[in-house]
Length: 120
Image 1 (cartoon, one colour):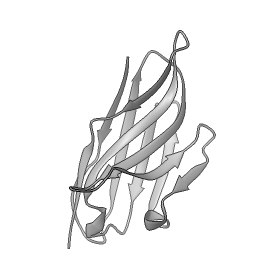
Image 2: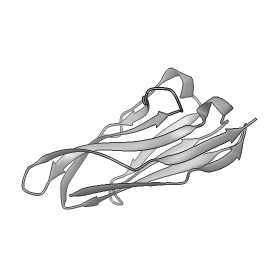
Image 3: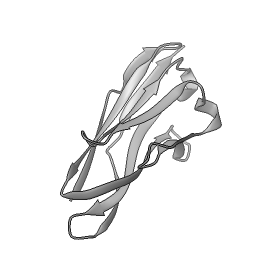
């Protein structure tokens, strides 16, 4: 069983910053790529940022230069530093991770989401 738990969401004014965390727990052999997604009311869930097991990163264009994804493998935790937040960043943010369990089973798991609200 794999659990992903997000934290760090909240209410912030436009131009402010938040740092999201995603802690992964379970009987894991390895964690591969990890992702942050977000979903606003009435919209499809969209990929925000990706970080590979080697630390390579990729961002959707609308957050480039404002968001930074990182991971601490020892802590099994992924982060999303969000700066210069805009009202259109308001969404529920979800973390997602791929990996392998002890015993060899692959997993693709999601967190429960954390709300980010940016006021104008």
